[in-house]
Amino acid sequence: MSLAYACVHSDPPSACDLCNATLCEDFMDAKTVHGPWANLCPTCFRDHGVGLGTGRGQHYRRQPDGKYVKIEG
Ligand SMILES: [Zn+2]
Image 1 (cartoon, rainbow, N blue to C red):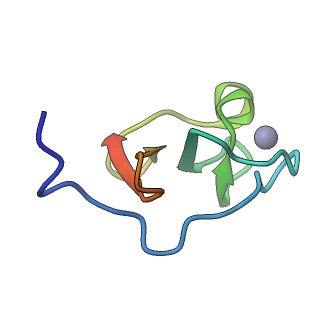
Image 2 (cartoon, rainbow, N blue to C red):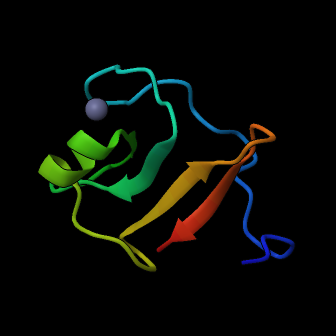
């Protein structure tokens, strides 16, 4: 799979907005069931996210070069 045209997050967060966990490999920039958007760890996304897709959320994964690339959503 080529990531040449993938969407790279320009300003990736270092911690989850809800539980303050340090974000490692994956995070979601997603709308929450509470209304606001947030940078979520996978656990908070599962518990508070409304899902993936346009207008809902995007799933980013860290690449070996340290950049976060959108893989879903
Ligand atoms: Zn969290």
